[in-house]
Image 1 (cartoon, rainbow, N blue to C red):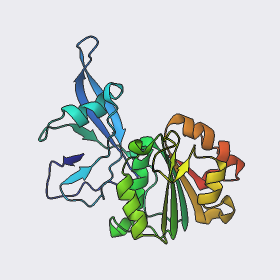
Image 2 (spheres, rainbow, N blue to C red):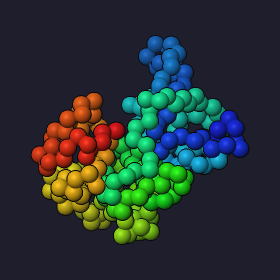
Image 3 (cartoon, rainbow, N blue to C red):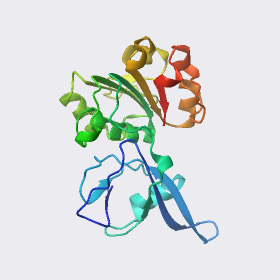
Image 4 (spheres, rainbow, N blue to C red):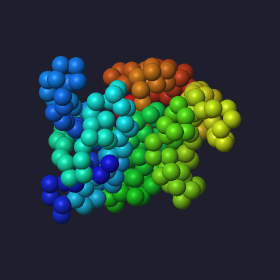
Length: 243
């Protein structure tokens, strides 16, 4: 979804790997009362885009109050409130690590896309990373659930020596045409595709996804200690960033 800025002559100027808070006054279908609904979203457009920015929003239907409103009910030309606070700056570009591994699940792909703008040189020059290689493991239920897949695949094709993009589907029909990785993002796939902890300070792993992903792979995102599979593989807290 594309949103226009109040000043169409200026860029948003948001730091790479920062998110926005979106807010709308929506009616509670249960009691008819109106209430403010606020959710965080990470733009997927480059931060020097003039007069607008793009969000990748998954429509969860009745299970996603604000996402459903933006995808189904918000008319072209309609308005919605956005706010940025300092806390929403996660890990700013440019990145100093030579090797970056990314693990994403579902809508957790959005900060990875924003980071890739800097890593692959598609964003502002001041935020472009010196990273030499980046690998992304992206977990989804099935092919229809992949968000931004065509764009990511095109980036991988255009940056073959630098960017490796791997889908991992947990519930894809066995008779489908999909030929990629199946199951879940596990120790074997991390060892196969991501840079090892033994590369030291040259390596960092970004993780963003649902709570169960943090629990299994690195420990809760509000805890600096690295647990789970990444902990077992020897990654330290300085080598893992939990979005």
